[in-house]
Length: 145
Image 1: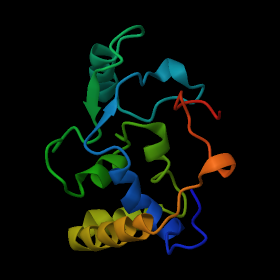
Image 2: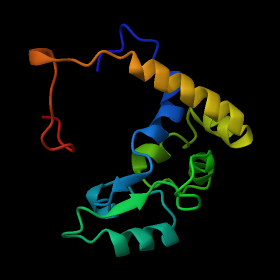
Image 3: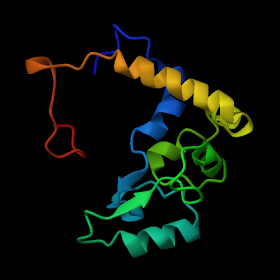
């Protein structure tokens, strides 16, 4: 995607990350798929293994927020602060880096999250997709081609 003509920036990433796969994500997520240890807790990891077998189960879904899976709220960020992010890419939003203060702000102030989320969705709507030879349509989403 091209962000040159939009107002979407890195400050939108934490709130927009929640929208990228709301409310559920496909489940072929296991700690064996990465050389980086999963940041999820033992209980979360056990639940994932039950719903995400090593083979098959590709149509299974797993909620990104185990506490309030059917609600749109800021609990996703509380999970990150408790090291219970479902995806490693999500957990990187709260790992001692620059986004930690944004995540903590969303935990402390749900209205701030709601406002930033709305602004991020509007900014993402202004992103012009790359088309033709300038763009890439992935047939396998976990590969670069």
